[in-house]
Length: 138
Image 1: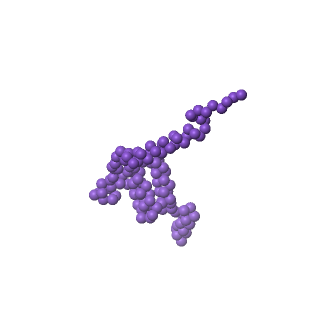
Image 2: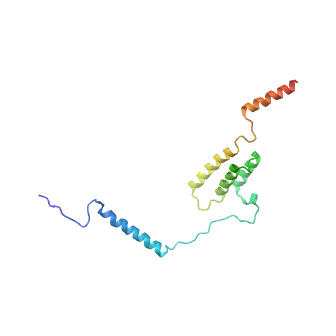
Image 3: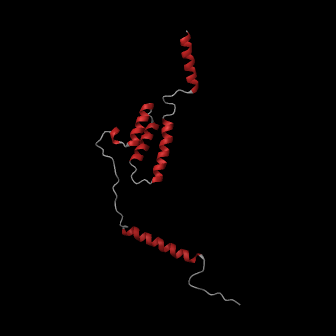
């Protein structure tokens, strides 16, 4: 007959997990109480003494030009596009994947902001062409 032998560590039970969890919690709490030794990092910021249009980077300048050409720079969506473009130009501590997401967001926001600007729809173009032909014939 086999006897059950007790050891200080169970083979695969939960008993090993709880002391490790408590020890990790206590260590984290002590680090937080000590102060952790963190340091302050200054983020890059654009100079504030320059006028607004010249202050932006390349993406912001081209976005501003596209919105001005479409006549949509003063709309809320146009201002949102400028904000995203400014964030792309001055990313701070953003990662590459965050910048890629911002570029995708700028592309979609810019297409929404400039939708229908400067271009006539197909039915309106046909209507304008018909009116021009009638004016020539009369």
